[in-house]
Amino acid sequence: MAKLKTLEAKNIKGLKELEIDFSQHGNLVVIGGDNGAGKTTALDTVLYLFGGKGAIPKDVLRHGSGRGEIEAELDSGLIVKRVITGQGVRLAAKNLQGATFSSPQAILNDLVRAANGKSTLGFDPLRFARMSPREQRDTLKELLGLDFTEEEDEKQRVLEERRQAQSEEKALAAEIESMEEIDEELPAEEVSIADLLEERKRRTEVNELNDELRRSLGRVREEIEGLKKRESELMAQLADIRASLVTKGQEAEGIAERVGEVQDEDVSEIDEKLKSLEDMNRRIRANNRSRATKVAYEDAVARVKAANQALESIEDRKREKLMAAKMPIPGLAFDEDGVTLHGVRMESLSGAERLMVSVAMAIAMEPELKVLLIRDGSLLDSGNLEELRRVAMDNDVTILLERVGDGPEVNIELKDGEVIRN
Image 1 (cartoon, one colour):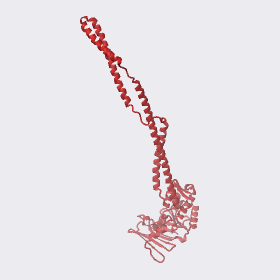
Image 2 (cartoon, rainbow, N blue to C red):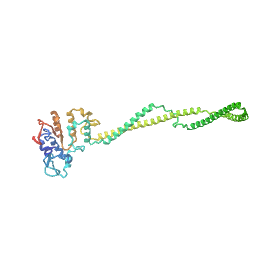
Image 3 (cartoon, rainbow, N blue to C red):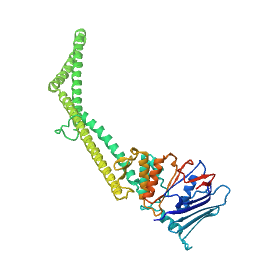
Image 4 (cartoon, rainbow, N blue to C red):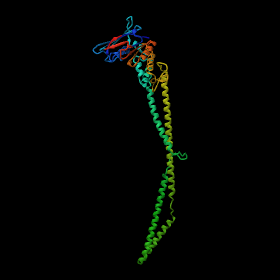
């Protein structure tokens, strides 16, 4: 375990010069002053010193200065110094005997790395306590190194599949409800009426020929009547008329003989069969639609069941990851809606309780360097500050907290980037 012994900084952002001897201030160091005095930068210097080049913004030097420095001594005797110029950033580390280290950043990384492998410098307990429930959940997942992206993507895909299957299931169930009962005695295939239609056509043609024959008989009989009339009027042509009568009479006898032999065929029987077959085919089509709808319904039900099983599997995998994760403090958990402590939602806790839980989380991360940074602490009352002081003392942790003001709780007061009370 290591703690800050001293911290010095020059020409970093709005900070002109800062010197802190932590042995004079105890475990809770409150840095105060007006807005723009350099309070936030004072905390940032710890992040810039230990966090590596990636933690340092481009315009970090104080306006008009070409060189900035941050140096800290730890109670272990390690001295680290970061020099920032327009040409780049240099880091050096040495012990009290003056021996230097070839890989100083690796040493600093080990100091600020939590038990779960994450850096603790970026975790602000007060900011965490004020986050929305879902932001707290996401931050805790990040601290634990839990990535549910794959599970969440799969979950959304399965949810959409289930939604579609449920929609189909509902629609198909309604369709089945409105359908006729399936007649299992009917064949599965519709019966062809082509042969019957062909037979009906043939019979119709025969009947048409018969009708034409009857019409021919009628016409001949009319001619006979005409000839008889002419017979009485044209006695002079009697011989010819009689010959015609004989001829026509013979013709009529032949036709009459044929007429006596013909017999009309019954078309109504075919019509009845056609009507019966059409009705049966309609019912067959209804049967087949019902069967197909039931198959589709059963498929939709199966897909809903499979989607539910897939969702359960996804939740099981997430639970396995959670069980394997080391929670910062006992009883801490999270779900889709946020973070809980012993089953109580974080938003249901008091502000002080949320802050203490957040501080406890940071402490439980077990970094080698026991320092916490709390920004924007102006809304904390005297009771909150005392509770923070107690927790810091109990856990032998140094807490740097910035707040607007110059009250008695302030250990170090800044003005225009310089210390005016220490």
